[in-house]
Length: 67
Image (cartoon, rainbow, N blue to C red):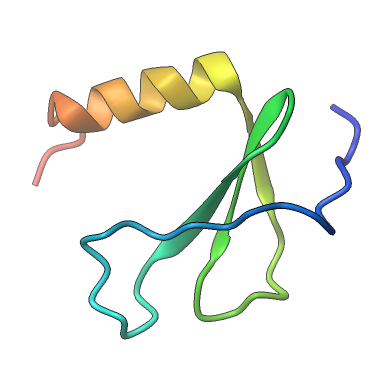
């Protein structure tokens, strides 16, 4: 996957964020979903295909990760 241009990405945090920097930020790009650490905006960005992101969110919603 080629690295996308993130200069115009619109980053968002969950409305459940405590504001203490314990969240990730997400940006929906044309072909991918980008995530980054909200307390370190210069941290590496993780990229997911839209299908993989949809599957991940579904698994979280179904509480498939224990805990």
